[in-house]
Figure 1 (cartoon, rainbow, N blue to C red):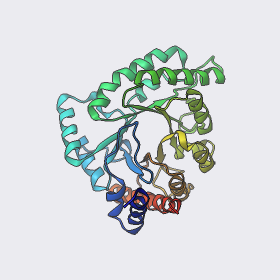
Figure 2: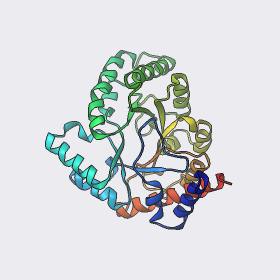
Figure 3: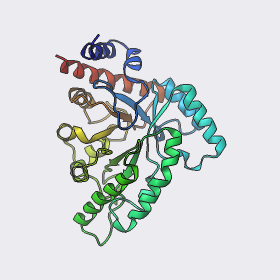
Length: 311
């Protein structure tokens, strides 16, 4: 069986049943610099959205019950004791979990975001300090935020600060098995935040021009901020390192609001997107069932479009 036949088989399996997507698409992820083969969509859960009343190891068990093996963090490990670390890593190995991304610099970015040149050194120090924990977690992707608008600086000065800050951050991880992801946040959720536009985010990344710096395309935030989701995805797919999924309004599961996620998944399949897609929604009903259904919907739509690219 050649590569084309192999991926056609995977696509057909994903279209054909609920179990096949787990077998065909959710294998443990490769390193940050070595993305999966075309046709492989890695689906993850941003853990802050679900199972928050449970101990961390039990949260991972729920993730697997919902059909996932990939988990994104927001720095939950920052205050772990050695006992906590031991329990989390044991459960990770036991369940075959991959921690694919962390937003552990969120606390730092609020005081030392990319848009503020006077706080750049603090951000770089925070990035250096988090790397040992990421290595221990075997987590290769780190989310960076622009931080808030800086009083007294023009928009262009803050934009240039983001570019220079990302270039300096890239130097910290250059040659290491890490990738940086820059995220947009809509102005309704945080009116203080600088980078609200996906279009501007991609322009900033093109100016940075570093293979270890990519964009976290959050469809929820961009729908609120500017819309026109698919055209920007098509034009900039080469810079997308991660997609975040939630519907508008309410940040609930796909199908509850105004975003046509079926078309977005099909676009990703047609563009041969081979990186991560993370569910970052607040389930309205049973989270295990809702997450399982959302994952299957994404894989089937993606696979149907990817199969069409094979001719």
